[in-house]
Amino acid sequence: MYFPFSLAHHQSGNNSGVIHSGIYYTPGSLKAKLCVQGAALCYQYCDQKGIPYKQCGKLIVAVEQDEIPRLKALYERGLQNNVPGLKLIGAKEIQAKEPFCRGLMALDSPYTGIVNYKQVAQSYAEDFQEAGGTILMDFEVTNMEMAKESSPGSEDGLKYPVIVRNKKGEEISCGHLLTCAGLYSDRLSEISGCSPEPRIVPFRGDYLVLKPEKCYLVKGNIYPVPNPRFPFLGFHFTPRMDGSVWLGPNAVLAFKREGYNLFDFSTGDFLDAVTYSGLWKLVLRNVSYGVGEMYRACSLSAQVKQLQRFIPEVTTSDVLRGPSGVRAQALDSDGNLVDDFVFDGGTGDLGSRVLHVRNAPSPAATSSLAIAGMIADEAKRRFEL
Image 1 (cartoon, rainbow, N blue to C red):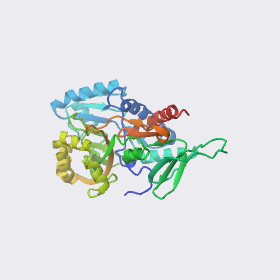
Image 2: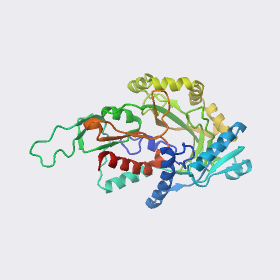
Image 3: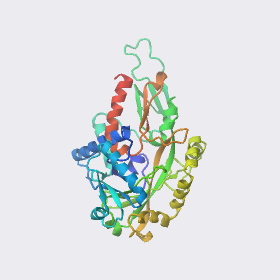
Image 4: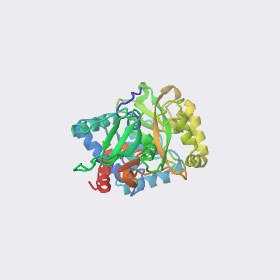
């Protein structure tokens, strides 16, 4: 159930809940650096705040011979990223850790964990309020502009020249502005007079859940070896803090930026996506993958077939359709997924006072405290604070 105008209502509250260790990301990238730092900070923060988590680990499992070289390359990448505790294990060790999982070889990441990110976000909010901050919800921004010049008699000048208005006509005055708008990051950037690129195209990920009596089949996270020809990770097994196990997700174009249900539709969001040349370039490069994802979205048995590659005991009678999330996927005009975190601002009186977090996909929740530190440093530099 979704509660409008609540904290962590969208990406942060509808993700898999995994504390990622930093294996997948290009060495030297912001994702690699901030994920490894962020995971350590996340565990530390949860310990300080008494937020429960489980360091249940993750196996990335090769089930075909041709996946083994990619798995070994992933292991080397993880080592370059300074991910702690990584090791390659064989079939017997896989079954020792995951008795129902079958595979030829796996990358064992014991540092991977799970947490309820809604609890983490709520704790961040409490910290912010205790520091003197104010949280406003149901404040849909429709306009930003510079205030008029201050009166000649003003001694301090105009201290808060940036005016932010919502659709109700309410406004907030501020000196500088940081935005991290997720599904609306491109639109908020455009409203501020900054570049609309990269554009956000929403992809819905639908999960299955194991029936409670079948959750014994999974102990920790079980992931496939990613295929570099395809843009998303593929189906995986994710235990949750409440004891449930999520399976998936798939990845299909959402016809609404907040379209968590199959038939959710927004004419504006749909046209915004399908008239963007970058989306068509992405689609044409991944036709077979996209058709397969659409088929699996409609076919429970097709999704279970993917899961049976790892745990053959799973059957269609063991699973139920579960929740969905919407990923704010940033695309450039050439149809490339923008993989790394992106921070930018603009020029002129207004643009020079704004810092946009343009792209913060997974592992942004894991990396959130490290990202916050980078944003604070960048704000100080840009705004000369």
